[in-house]
Image (cartoon, rainbow, N blue to C red; front, side):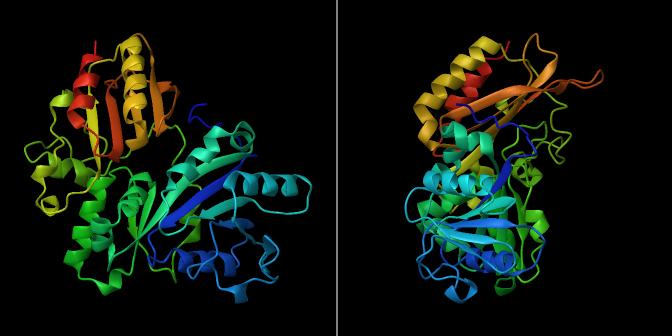
Length: 362
């Protein structure tokens, strides 16, 4: 199986909501479940505990695993296997016993979202029915720094995110907020980061993010590139950065940014760019080898590839050891083809990746 998922409108989109204990996931979820937003949502809670939805919101007793809420949403608890619950929901929806348009999975505060994401690629029936849309991670502005320092799972939650919501911004100074944001960018430069007040969060902006789509947009936060390239002016804009010969010699090291000197984050990111084409066979062999060796520590990786002899850009992405690629749109007549790849993971040896990728260039 690969990570490529078909863009079928009939597929049920799934959002994975994660974040450390106390960050505000449940507050956000309560709002989604109680507000009348015209969307029928099935919410899967990873476990009932003190962090879970308050029982007074539920219109049936807890013996029933699937509970219908009065605004057309459904809530169910996973005491066993996520795969079993998703299959159960699918069967009941197909039999018209349940009516929902999308699924939100709330993970426990200490969970690594990786295995949840992999569920959607490992099982053919689930992969054909559900479309994994995005991982949304909630980070607490007040305690976020300390949590990231002490909790490896919180770092994983940031590494997997397609969108990061920073809660409780009103409890910290602008300087503290900016420091936290800079650190998050450094850990995951491809996630959009927004401060959120849950009373006013726009639910529409949390759904249909398409973070797991293969598309030709690979936004990397310019702040990440700026911090790492004090001498370069080409990187200040998302769209300018492939206009020069960067190759792997651009140094994306942690030491340029004074915000990060004292945080030894295990989760980090680096970007590889080049204007030279890849040799397709060499690249495939290298990536296959890298994924075998570093798969468990590779959280998310994504890229736009310029391949020798191919008129279209190739789009690729992966989660852990699952990797997919497909052709994208043609390079334009005035467009200079380029490679841009981002790797996010735990203690990845950047030099091994950059040197290896450089060897794969024609």
